[in-house]
Length: 463
Ligand code: GLN
Image 1 (tube, rainbow, N blue to C red):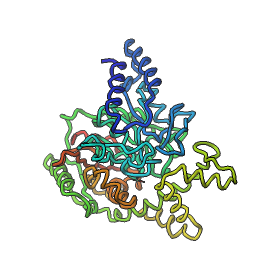
Image 2 (image 1 turned 45 degrees about the vertical axis):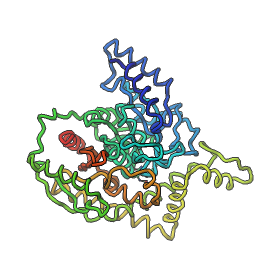
Image 3 (image 1 turned 90 degrees about the horizontal axis):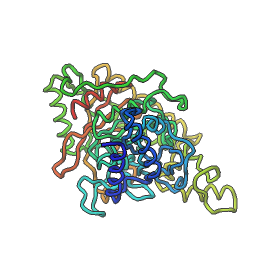
Image 4 (image 1 turned 120 degrees about the vertical axis):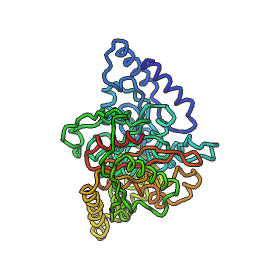
């Protein structure tokens, strides 16, 4: 089986599963071009890397040269960047085939991939009809779906509060949020600059390692990129692995009132499995977890308010047909170009940032964020890794999910994932079993900064 065969199979899968709405753009001509080049290298036995010829999808909030980068919004519907995001560039340099751009919640704000101008992505798990389907999670839902259905071997997502791990959990695949700064954000259209990280979605932990090894490392174009040289991860053979003596913490605050019995049981089973194989499993406390969602909401909206200011209809993106005054042009462009979620966050963010509110909200939230991060640092004195659920339930039905207000959705869906972004630490979601109704249930492992080699090894052990 050669790169051309693999790419063809991938394209036909994308076609076959098109009604699930994973992709916004499939760059067919470019794909064919890349595949032909890859085929040549394959025939000469000179592949560029282990990813040469491998189909990969990229979330549509990463810039791709000459390929539309929409953020699932009207604002950027016709935006074609002139450059590639660093992760895209690195993937291309490794010979990976960039199949196209995947669906998301507008500007990555959401947890469902339901707020896209291209329509919601639909989960294959438990799918009955176009009106009766489970959400894929989000906001990197299109990327997760592309991997879960075999349209691609792996995909790039982004993770600000859980957007890679949440859809990985609902779609039954692996989702990694690397340490903040380990993978360059250059070319990732920002949501919350201080928390955003490119995420990796894959079928297996080994695939995740291959992609991480390709995209990680210092990038002078990202001022928050870690300068420490990246050492490629090589995982041991699963049969040779042991968790003997591994100190695993169960944070008691993750017993949330909305946690479903099935997820709770799965979490318990994994804790028992680790313990029965020699790990030291103990309960610990991360006391500030309960403040995380509120704190995140403030910081998110403040950074959103400032990030979104660039979309004024003048330099690039959508421009409303409005000639009366420049101010009116700004206002109409922004009210037509953004959906309600985005507009609400801009408004609230600007409110929090008013001079009279700045200390009360923004500065306070920064302090609480420090407390949350300190909880994790204190935990590392006692344990090496934390075991938690990823999501509180299995994938909700689209109709139920959309009934709730956005605030509720955020609070419920991001409860377990979002503290890791506050602290910048790495976390991975892996599927562990199916629910009675046949939907995937996943658990999350969280480690200290740059503990990816250990995190991925334990994930592989549990896989
Ligand atoms: N659900 C969260 C939000 O809407 C997280 C999104 C993300 O990680 N991109 O902000």
